[in-house]
Image: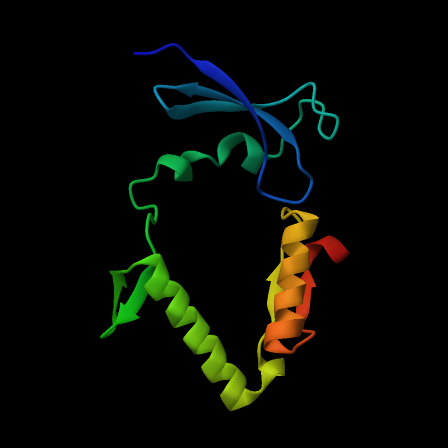
Length: 136
């Protein structure tokens, strides 16, 4: 067994951006604690930030996109998945109008990513139906 490494990172569960220190051994997260040097949380964490990391190594975690075909979810390529999504959005927009589509932006995204999200909704979908948890 290898020696434990300590990796500083930012929690991804909410928009607060707490600093975390991961204890990693043999490429597996063993433990998480709050980063005492992080100005946001000064070493404190919520229960999710401290304990909800098992999903990273879960055996049933998705590793490729899935599309439902003949009633069953089957693995597909990213190209096919994106084509499917684009086709479905086009069909919905044509059938029901652009205001039938909405998008939720995430506070954990960068400003640039949220800008592209709203630009996509307004310029491509032609809808102002965009919201996010960062407005509260």
